[in-house]
Amino acid sequence: MELLEDVKVHGGFQKRYQHDSKVLECPMTFSLFLPDNPQNEALPLTWWLSGLTCNDQNFSTKAAFQEHANYYKMAIAIPDTSPRGESIADSNEWDLGQGAGFYLNASQEPWKHHYQMYDYILEELSKLVIDLLPNFNQQEAIMGHSMGGFGALMIGLKNPERFKSISAFAPISNPSQVPWGRKAFTAYLGEESWDEWDPVYLIKQSTATTPILITQGGADNFYPEQLHEETFIHAAKQSKHPIQYKYEEGYDHSYYMIQTFIKEHLSFHHKYL
Amino acid sequence: MELLEDVKVHGGFQKRYQHDSKVLECPMTFSLFLPDNPQNEALPLTWWLSGLTCNDQNFSTKAAFQEHANYYKMAIAIPDTSPRGESIADSNEWDLGQGAGFYLNASQEPWKHHYQMYDYILEELSKLVIDLLPNFNQQEAIMGHSMGGFGALMIGLKNPERFKSISAFAPISNPSQVPWGRKAFTAYLGEESWDEWDPVYLIKQSTATTPILITQGGADNFYPEQLHEETFIHAAKQSKHPIQYKYEEGYDHSYYMIQTFIKEHLSFHHKYL
Image (tube, rainbow over all chains, first blue to last red; front, top):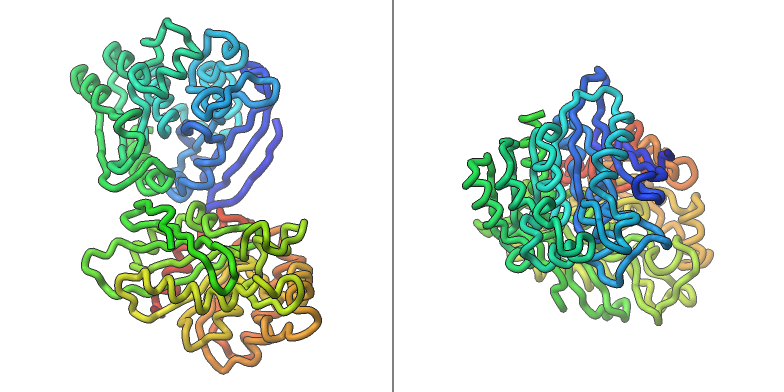
């Protein structure tokens, strides 16, 4: 594993690493923020999953989360959004293939050979990241944006013993029913097993009560066709799952929206970690 | 003039415009942040000048200034760093030509035909920006980073009647004596008139007492060869110019450093506006 970057910001340290992934069979980068921690306190770990077209640097450079993560003494891990490389399957479209891994394990040709982001994050990358924490308190949360908001809801709901809280900005909360999700699920999963990756199905089945916070901008162009979290919120409420949904007038789908509300999300996770 | 972007962030609005510049004889973009201002209070205007290779979007996306500019009710104008376009002179090097205009008026071939950033900002762009302010209180400040830190010191010192305060992150404070500055001055100015563009000379001549704040990171790779503000600080102190110099251990030359200290700079300007 190679340390590519280690930059001081708001008292903490924004790091970036490259490693050879066995699960994905390609070199991968990821970013990790560590707060200033002179007393070597035990720190919780929060995962950030990014949206379509992003890599691990969009969140670290544009979300202005470091001040708050340093204040709350949280480590933040930021994976890439797909396997990468010339020998890796891709499409000519920005919402499928590289940069659009959807955080699941693909079962279909040609994607199944490298697109195993679920196993990569939960097993291989988790071990690497936790080894990099000087003093881990064994508490984890997960959050994300858009495709990564889907990833956070899906991974958090599938692993309630591991993630103490879940949050999402403008998530693709019901991928089986919207164009982005249907396109990705069709390519990566074929016609089967969509339910086990869809947060609406997962929250209906869940007996856990992991607290969830969702922020949605009212001026988000993707809201009507791709996001409209109502089905997910309705399912959560029907199963009496603790959920907060904040609809913020005037905000769009960009990192400006994330920058505005990231403090609120980190404060939310801090309560449970 | 065309509005390219208008995005809500921390209650305010990050806007981006394109216009045809008469001074530079090419289309130019610039960004403008306007705070939330429901009472239509009279607002001051602070200019941000970016560093080498930047355009007007680096600061707006990576500096996380909007929360604080909204809090202090300051408008922030962000010009591009040079004229742009296929028909505009350029070099094969990232520190000369497009993206590296150095905020001066070039006198030498081929640069003198478009590289008139000083006149562009102080005359043409100022009029455009001030027309976009709903209620301007006639107070201005100027700040910048690296090449733009040079620009802020130089423009602020040359125009004390106009700019009430000046600040800079890791500025090229003595361009006549460092490689970046000597290369740019040689190309744009030839062998003459360097003094009138060099902040060290300007502060020695100045009878004004515009307050200045400079932040320099202690882990900035460019510090030893390109920045080392000691000559400028010494000249400022000799002429009893009010100056604060903050040397911040561990911080580098990046927007992570700017993000960390931008609140302090905006608070500084707020006192004088």
